[in-house]
Image (cartoon, rainbow, N blue to C red; front, side, top):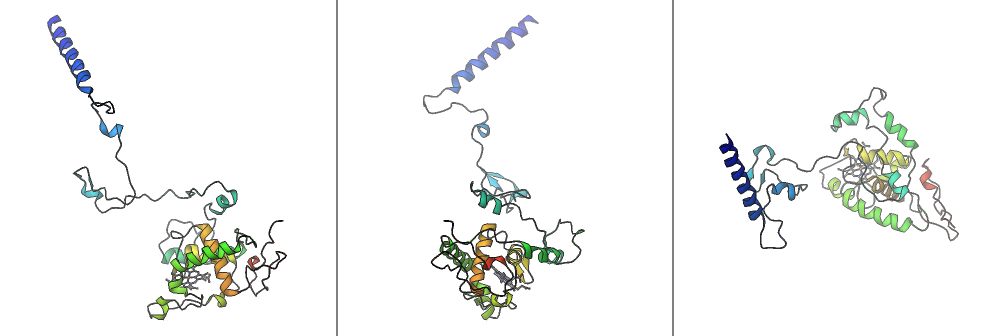
Length: 256
Ligand code: HEC
């Protein structure tokens, strides 16, 4: 029995010495022999990469599948530390309308408190644009609005907001309204429709951030009232009130 212990002892000593010797390399920057390389250097998981083949290992179940995971519900994107912007980016407090959820596949919502199809949409008329226009920021907001509008909306709504974008004039699409015919919409309703979609218009929540949607709402107001967002020399709004019941025609004077 003692003999066996001795042999095992010797073999273990040799194995340990061997490991110690082989672990070292002459390269001073090398960590030496890595027993578990994946733990030292975890393979970088990147969004939008096909993980069906990693380091020569094939995994049919993962081929052509989406690698970027959808963030958990109510995740707030990092928008910096500016309080106003953080507040603007909090999860949207309104449910999609029941009708829209059905036609656009937004499942998993509880509509029991929300019997009429457009209850939430009507309620959203009360929401005010949290992005306040001032003489100091209006130019930048309209510039950004134009940029977003050109990229995401113009092909349907048209450069002038008259509903005659190339999608419509080509005959591919119909039913896009002229914004001036919707001047009575509240800011919040516009936000709601852009966020969730309305009728033949799909939701744009995945394409533009909440701040960008509010920026677009200002930009659309300009189609409805060209004086919207212009200021007198004393900083008061030069916009003549339109039929819009919205507060957005009343713009804040710059802080003195
Ligand atoms: C695929 C074409 C299409 C695109 C792209 C599109 N819209 Fe629309 N939009 C429509 C249609 C159609 C309607 C009319 C919906 C209805 O009232 O049934 C509409 C309606 C609206 C309304 C009025 C909503 C209401 O509550 O009455 C607003 C505001 C609006 N769109 C803004 C935008 C903005 C901003 C973008 C870009 C981010 C955009 N749309 C992109 C087709 C589009």
